[in-house]
Image (tube, rainbow, N blue to C red; front, side):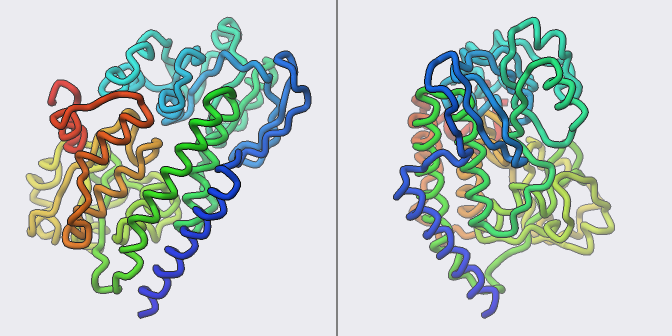
Length: 367
């Protein structure tokens, strides 16, 4: 009963967040302050690490080095302003389908230790980065490049409602960096995120403790490489009506042990960023696990970026909810959800076959 009441409260908090944000038009959560309204001026954004960063008003050259930031740039329609990215994923898979021009953007050999001289030579004005490498941030800033933190090692959030706010701030922050139409597109995405999370949590909030299954999430590439309590995955699973077994560990990404998995004995396993259920189902070490014995090991959807951290993370939330609670979400058509998202945010019309490839973690080639 206590768990049920807690989930109801969280659902109410999400609804309050949605109403408040809609009332302000999903206003920029990076607290941008314009110091000079002309194109040659600057303005200040507050990044996810709470740092005040001064950037030009006319940003046209950005390096999306941080994790899924390349996907956010694609979603916001500003690929033409990206001069370097930190992931090869921007030129492969579904990214190459919805934004083929990204294939021409140079990829940093090591996004965690980028070639500063190369970034300077490209006229880079802003780098989207992690908070985990302060020495690199200083080196970039000393070279005259503004660094905006768009992903945190420790999220600092404790509830689903706070996670939603964090994800909205991340997207609106990137929108503020690029400016122009990206700001409006980010606001549009916020409204989508609020509507989608509310539609799911309004149902999962009523689940009792006995109705909430345990979930093991393989981050990959190894079966024991997982996301912990500091990960976005923790909150996506929770909103979907599951309980991430590794949430007790205050980590984002780490390697667990087989002994610990046996102790957790999860009811469901999602393969995360790995398109290979046999990694677990064909390994004798996993044969005693509930999820394996009951045939409840699943692949996730394959997004333009990593689905657990990109802007299509709420599609993943819906997919997990549909898998865990099929009777509760009989009317949720994931094929249509994927097609609608790609049309609205990537401006790309998927066929049913393409949407189903995405839902089964397959590339455009069906592999």
